[in-house]
Image 1: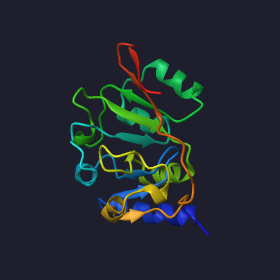
Image 2: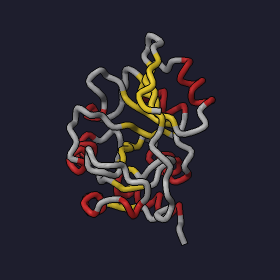
Image 3: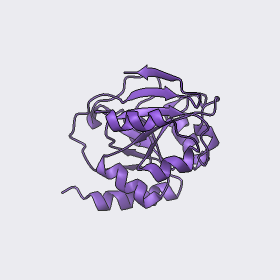
Image 4: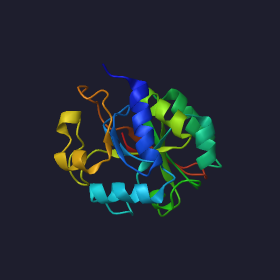
Length: 189
């Protein structure tokens, strides 16, 4: 039987040592690490064969974590979070308190509040945001289920979470960029 608390413990032990994990999110399977650890973030870029100029997103589990990373959160961000019926990633300006190699050149960072129980509990334990990027080599299709994830990715992580491996995922989140000067731009529907 799947035990969420055991999986949270196992994943946390890997992450606190700078490891990277393969885990279920509220959208697709993700590769993740401690968002404040630049060496761990670099491991993910290397595994995905992705340029560090293509930033990744972070998952958060609440307002406190958001305000730790973003000093100014536009009011429209809260409206979008409250009104969104599906997982929505917001790209916000002036990220701080995370690894510099996860922040985009314009100082923005994508973030998503999660409801998925494993991710939520893991961040409660970490007390830090969790990097999340789709479990594929850069440029290849995003796998919609665990069985679609390449052997290269599965062999490249330090731990694979043993939850929801039979679930077929929907699609990636909506992405909306919000700037401090109140501009709103939909990046992906």
